[in-house]
Structures are given as C-alpha cells and as structure tokens.
Amino acid sequence: MLTGARCPFVSVIIPVFNDGERLKLCLTALAHQSYGLENFEIIVVDNGSNELELIKTTVLPYSNVTLAFEPTPGSYAARNTGLSLAKGEAIAFTDADCIPALDWLEKGIKRLLDTPNCGLVSGKIEIFPKDASCPTAVELFELTTAFPQAEHLEQMKYGATANLFTWDSVVQKVGNFDETLKSGGDLDWGIRVYEAGYQQVYAEEVRLKHPARFSFKEIRQKTIRLAGGHYDLLERGLYHFFHRHTLLFTLTEQKFLPKSLLKEIIFLIILMQDLIPPINYVKTSCRSPKLTTWSEKSKVAWVIFRIRYISAWAKLHLKFGQVSIRY
Image (cartoon, rainbow, N blue to C red; front, side, top):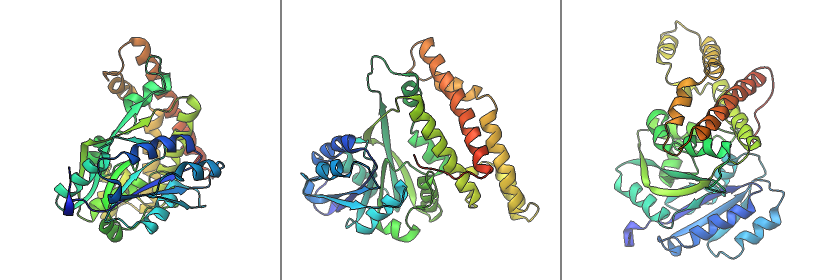
C-alpha cells in the first residue's frame, strides 16, 4: 500500500450524460478504494443531462464528490471543466458507466510514481455483458474488440479516457483536451503527450469494468460518433491518427505533395479501408478465446461487416456537409 509522500492527492474526473444509474455503481466502487478517501477528490461533470435531479441525488451522499456543470456538448468539454476545478497533483479519468477495481487508484498512482518522466498510464478495461450466459451479437463483438488499450498505446500513442492517469503538470504543459471534438480527443491528447517527450505505459493491473454495448442501435451510434471524430481530426490537419502512411507524409514534408491533396488521399484511404471486406479483422476477432462456438463467431463477423459499411456511409455524409454528433 502506498503511504506518506507516495500518496499524492488525486482528482478523479467523471463526465456524465444521462447515466445516473450507472454513475451510482461507479461512485460506490470509488468510495471503497484502498487509496484512502482523504487522498482523493471526485469531480462529476454533468454535460447537459435530462435527468439532472437523479445526478444530484446520486452524488449527494459522498463528501469528497463535487458536482459541476458543463453545457457545451461533448465529454472532452466536460473533462476540461473538471480539470479547471481539480486540486490534485495527479489526475485520474474514468466514465460514469465504469466500475473501478477497489485498488484502481492505488495501482494507477503507483505506476505513475514508478515510471520516470511519466506522461500517462493507460489501464485495462474489462468488458462485461448484461447476461454472461446469453450475450447478444453486439456484446460478443464488444467482448472481443472493445478498448484494446495496449494496442492503442503501442500503435497510436494514446489511451482511452475511460481508464487514464496523468499528472497535473503534464496537463499544464501539453494543454487540455480539444473540446470541439466529439470523438478522438483522447487520441489527439495522447499524441501531444508523446510528442512532448513523456513516457507512456500500459498497466494491466490498473483495472476497471465497462459494460458492453447491448443493441445494434448502440453500436451504430458508437460507429457514427467514431467516424465523426476521425473525420474531424482529418479536416483539422491532425494527421497523427493516420501516421501509418509515412510515405505520404514524407512527400508532403519535401513539398512534393500539397497538404490539401494529402488530406484527400488519406480520406480515400480510410474510406476504402471501410469498404474493402474486413476479412483479416474478422479472422483476428474470431480467434478470440472468448468466442467458443461457430454461432458466436458468425454473429461477430456479421456485426463487423455491418459497422464497417455504416462507418463508410457516415464518413461520406460528413464529406458532403453533415457535421459530427456526440449521441
């Protein structure tokens, strides 16, 4: 257990939008942390919920919880409001629908302290279905593909803000989240941390649980939101997300390829990635030990094909004038 000088004060920031019931589970888990209630505060930021009275009632019993309000739509705007109120030397981000392990804070802070020049710690997000004995096709898809934190950190230099730790000093140096983004803000912020020269670590032991999306409507909404985030990153010249196309960037840096043309080429590439049948993605997902029958594997394959084409459809609509939304 961390003690004394090794227990920096932590600000836990939780955006919430119409999710009062699951926020109760999150706050209950945080109330029983091994880190010690005197060592952290919780800032719940309501982002325009229709059920505001439920949110107020939910946070009322907790002496170390502050309820703030951010009317600008989007979780990144809400997180920035939380950062403006934070008193902690360390910052921990999670979401209202997450259930942290009882040693979540202790393990997260330990990794921050044990990693020299640490910019962020990305923790494990364990997905769970409503009924483990009878998961839906969408839940099976989520169980095998959602929140690959280690992969995202290694390949794209970011961690999802559902389970993320950092220092206040890092935020002061690299800046807040881009609150104009409805999705992809954690990617943009993580890359800024990386480019500032900080270490980034994935910590398997820093665990929390996240419910799988249950219905196709929910996964469709998520797909459209993610497509909007990717498109917005591209439109604003934030090409980091597409860093795999190094030859294109080299040509641009050497003035052989205008940036405007680079943007159009990358858009066509990501659109084609959605339109080409995702055979390799299906094969990789279906090898998951969480899928034990051919029926489960076929359900996941069906979801993958559908969301790929929904993503392409959403990006084309954005290209022809629609704006991204948060749902």
